[in-house]
Image (cartoon, rainbow, N blue to C red):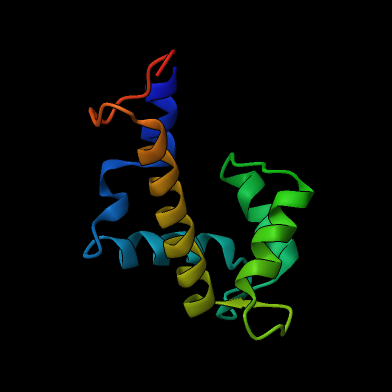
Length: 110
């Protein structure tokens, strides 16, 4: 179970910079429902639900407020990409701290 969770949260390509912009662009375009080049809180919430990632209002608002660096009420692509990169780094560090024997697996009792 924990191995599945690790693979879901930290896919192998998560830390490969060459692949990230394409993944980020694809996700951003899916969330930017009206195609105006920015994502507002409504688009973020609706888009995540449509992608099967319902995080809940608190988590979605936290993503939005943390990512909205210039506080204009919208996430542009640069803000969105920075948020995702920072979040992936934090998740990788959290995983490494739990992977005591460095085998890239999470097992019960580790």
